[in-house]
Image 1: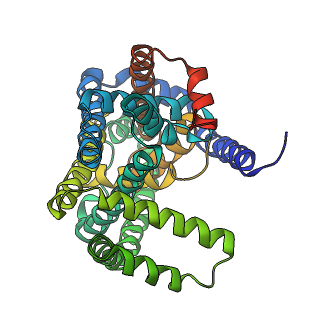
Image 2: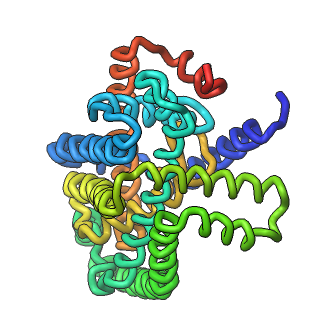
Image 3: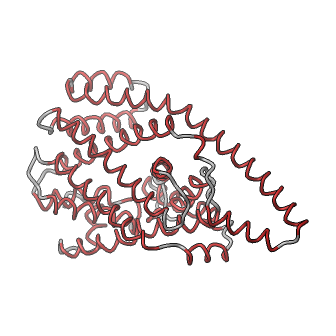
Length: 379
């Protein structure tokens, strides 16, 4: 196999997923995990799935706002392309879903590929900007007194186990548990305090990004010239890619009819992230882990950062360990965190694959077509 850039990223992603899967699986206590999965209240799974699909539908609405100045496209067609794209990213390597979405719409609606890709670039910029805003607000206002809330089922099981022991063992276990709990609380508080310090940096980055966004939209030519001068020190190949990306982004901004659309797209972007957090929050009731909505937002932020890494299709391993570690900040027991991570991954991946395949069938295509079109988008 030729080691080009694509194959290197693919191999790196597989290695990262294998390492993360090992980190997640090595601490599994199968009896406790099995019990946590059996005792979960799965009545909350369906509402969580509905919220997940609602977030994808809002993505389609946002895409409609971006692409309407070029051509009016039905939201159903955009939702179809969105679901096919997410499905492709879940089962095919190299995240081909990112390029599949504009290809499908470009071919079906007879829109220039450069224009379609420009809308995707703008969409991604708004996603990053929204994530920065959510993260900075979350870390700044996250209360420390709720960080130590433990998983009720784990505490209950621990107490029942201690009561089964003799008085001597009970005292020893109580002291040990108290010491461990205090140590965990101190660690969690320290972690949140350290993260909160970064909220100032993120706030500055967010403000800078918003100002840059409006300057690029209002003065595209001057902004492009200034940016090219600022990155003079970069190697030519990297500099060319940055400039091309900038031009695509500016092109995407210019297709908007007015500046009010920028605000509307920003609001829709925030709604997407809030819906993602809402799905995490609702599912937490299945495992009785007492996760606040702020905690759900924190989990989403951690997942967003984690899945940005190169990895195997379906975010296997990376998704699981990121969920587990983010819940650990809130003192959720290992078995509960791992079982929750497994179910959260399942409802984010399996239903999307099924619906994406149905939309693929609706478009009269098959998986082989997606790989071919991703390799040769001009065809």
